[in-house]
Length: 415
Image 1 (cartoon, helix red, strand yellow):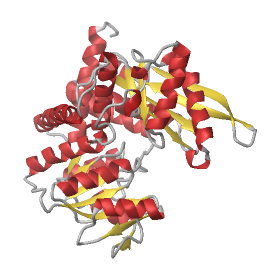
Image 2 (cartoon, helix red, strand yellow):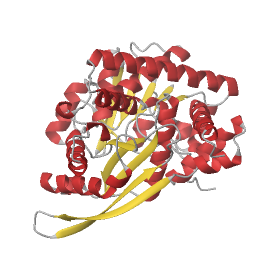
Image 3 (tube, one colour):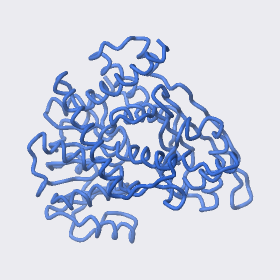
């Protein structure tokens, strides 16, 4: 049977599988298995050459039973409705696993930012927010950065929304530059939260992080910071990949020097004395910790039986398919699921939103202390549920999150 890789179907399947363990009411499953609202917009943008191009954007709001929707906006040529819907659902459960008062949202614009000037990027950013302004806001739906969107893009979006409302609306979006309501610690938050979850996982399986070997797939912001923080803990980064290739060194690489090389050459390949390997080789290396920090569907039924890592920490969204999950669990691999491992980003986004609403801002130490406490608590609760039901960590995370959303839906009288 061919493995199903449609992200929306995967998300629905994960809900169905977790729901079995809590005898989820079919009516509740039906509600949770579909987004509450999906808005598709088209908007014109004047390009630098004087032509006008019409772009398509999508915003999916999965569930707001517990609070406003929350989730990023990505700019990518391969954005699809099913992808955005799935990501909004995963955001609901990501918020739920760390106990945030949010439901999930996600957005995307079908475009290639690598082929646009800074001015064109600004006009696309402003055009999209203007088109979806009717359904977003600090008490409705709070966007954030995602693939190929940046703090500057968030600032343009915030400014556009503020102009429409006639007053500063810093709390309508997160991931902003510090000068316009951003939070200290936000840039590192996703990777930092992932490291906190790795620390707890290593503790549970008795792995000493000092000297532990690590492979990192994807060397963008999250992959690099995760590698650097793990190196600071004494881990040895032995393999790294980006979209152009992968490199390996038994002696380990210095994450900061590798980043400098990538910034100079555009890729991680040809770094020092490292050998060139394939992306598949990286995933299947005999390392202690594997950090997938790239795109969806990287570990599948085809390669799961070759995964040798003791811990797989999903810094990316959806890197492991359901069929692969079964293989990894059977083989004793500790998978820290994406909705837990990379929840640091949305957690510090929540902190940013709270600071915006209070107009009172915290130190970086305060942010990281609060993040560590939430991540440790979420990991422990997920781990306890996994042991109680004898299930993998992903199913346990879904059990906890779905129970929370289902309770809110019932209390509000929707079922």
